[in-house]
Length: 473
Ligand code: SAH
Ligand code: SF4
Ligand code: F3S
Image 1: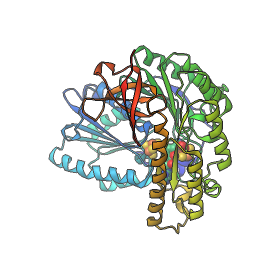
Image 2: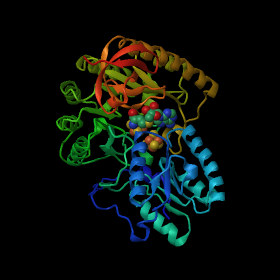
Image 3: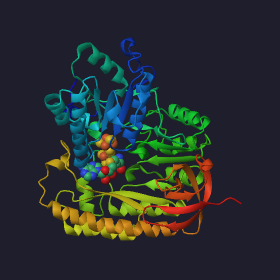
């Protein structure tokens, strides 16, 4: 049994990170444990978690399990959780209730609880005390040990809790079953050392560790050979990629080398403004296969709040970077994240956020009400602002977000834009895909276009999406 410890998780060691290429293995006792059985993975949270779920699916398939979309029909259910805000928590607690019923009917059902919530001390203690029927709790640093945990559970028939607070090594060569045949997530970095005062990620994902450039480039080359069109490079803070490597190799170098693999489209998330270098901007501008789309969280338009958030930039510095990007990368689309209702955010602070939004007119923003997270510095601040006031602020901000999203989309009306058509749209008979600038387009087109990048003529624009037809001469 290994329980998480928040104090340990906060520590940053100077210890060298090893890259291990053959750490993952399947003990012979569980080798074919899944043959003839079905697995489901329920995923909450960010792209990092979605990608972890692809690795978990890969592991399950190596154990012999086959995929089942409806978890109620599965023999093993994996809940991959997110801790970023209270509502992510609540969803998971809800699902645990439903799975308990399934377990009552089918005692052979195996339940695995993993992801960022498993890294939280209070949550794992709660699972131990109140949910003894959850078979396995495993953290974000050791999903490669799922087969080992399964073996332990089979042998002892007891709950297995295996969560490490200190991150340890980078584990390469995990099996993977990707969700898409055309778009792939590629991790370039794990963890985060920024410690924004509201955020739990540095505790749940450990210190920043960059993967080796060679390993990333090989992965992208392999994806290209398999016919993948697009890669999204993943990290909590990708602009800081390489800062923990000995080589003096940067995100600008990595982008350039990935561009040279010739893969059609390269994206990356998320960029912290602090580490965004001029070299990086220059590389994005120079290479056509690096997409003109940047997600650049601002979080607040008030310097006082930014300071309390420990974001390390002022509004002026953010704006300077924003305008530089707009100038150097023609047609770039910039989206952002904003938190309203940080403890004691005044109405004047909030007005400043609205004013910045009016000035920068983002293509889109993901907006959140501040949610106190266990152990983070901001969670200890006594907050005087009512939830009603916070909801009101979120509503006002969202009005603006929608207004400018529509205006940003209008620029595309009656223009021809490149779209990677990736599958069927929810709408009858249409297909869908994203532009280079990450706009969702529903398209009247034959399904034979799926998997291709094609010019699309935009016939109509809405707030969240656009409509178009394929334009071939
Ligand atoms: N690493 C990314 C963000 C990851 S979390 C970055 O720094 O840009 C995604 C978003 O969730 C954050 O940008 C922030 O806007 C929001 N968020 C994080 N912690 C939060 C909290 N405690 N309450 C509300 N929103 C939060
Ligand atoms: Fe959280 Fe800040 Fe790290 Fe993003 S940069 S993951 S908001 S601590
Ligand atoms: Fe959630 Fe963990 Fe991602 S907290 S947002 S799943 S890094």
